[in-house]
Length: 40
Ligand SMILES: [Zn+2]
Image (tube, rainbow, N blue to C red; front, side, top):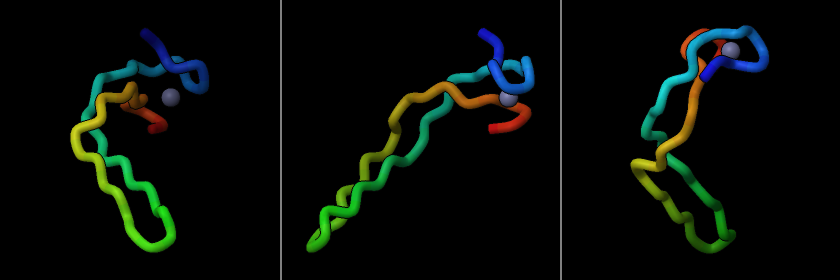
C-alpha cells in the first residue's frame, strides 16, 4: 500500500485515540491505523 500524497510506504501503527466528551475524556490506546512513513 502506498500513500496518495507522496507515494511513500504506508505502515500499520498503533495510535492513541482520544475523545473529549466535555465532562470526561475517553482514551483508547492501541488503535490500529495506516500511517505514511514519510508524511504521516
Ligand atoms: Zn505520504
